[in-house]
Image (tube, rainbow, N blue to C red; front, side):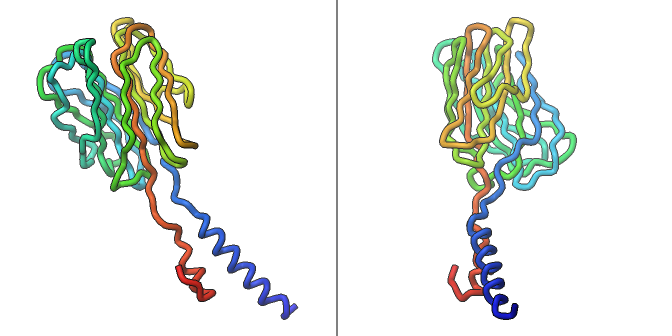
Length: 247
C-alpha cells in the first residue's frame, strides 16, 4: 500500500496539471434586452433591468431611417462608460444609418440608457440595448458588419468559440423574424405595418455566426458585431511548480 502512494500522489498532481492547463475562461453569457423607438425629438431612452454581471457590457444598436447627416452624438446612463464602436451608412433609402455603441460595467437593477442624436429625428429610429457578462473589457467588440436588406438579409459575424454575436435590423414594414443561429428575437417593436426594428443574439460555437432576417417588405439596414469573451492564460503554474516545471 505504501509503495503505491507515490504513484497515487503523482497521478493526482498530473490530473490537476492537465485540468488546469485545459481550463478556459467562461464564455460570454446573455443577460437582458429592451427596445424603444421614436420619429421626433433628439433623444430615445430605453429602460431595462440589468443583472449582476462580472465583466459586464451593454451593447446599444441604433437604426435610423432617413438619417441624412444625423448621427448619435452621445449615450448616457446605466452607470456605464460609453463608447462608439462602429457604424454603417447605406446610400439610398433616405440615407439609412446604423450605429453600435458599448458601455462597460453597467450597473445592476432598473436602469435607463439614453441615446442623444445630433439633430431632430426625421423618421423612424430604433434603439435596442442588450447586456452580456464575461466580456473582454479591453476590446469588447469586433467584426462589425452591415447590410442593406431587402425581404431577406443575412448578417454573418466572425466569431470564436465562447464569444457571442449580436445583430439588429430595421425595415419599413414588418413584422420580422430571425433564423439560422436563433429563432428568438430579444427585443423588438412593430408599428403595425409601417416599421419594424429588432435585435437578437447567439452564443458562438465556431468561426462564424449567421443571422437570417426575414422581413415583411422593403428593408433599411441590418447590422451585427462580435461580443468578445474575456481572455487570459490558464492558471496552471502553481501545480507545475510542485513538480519543478516552469510555467
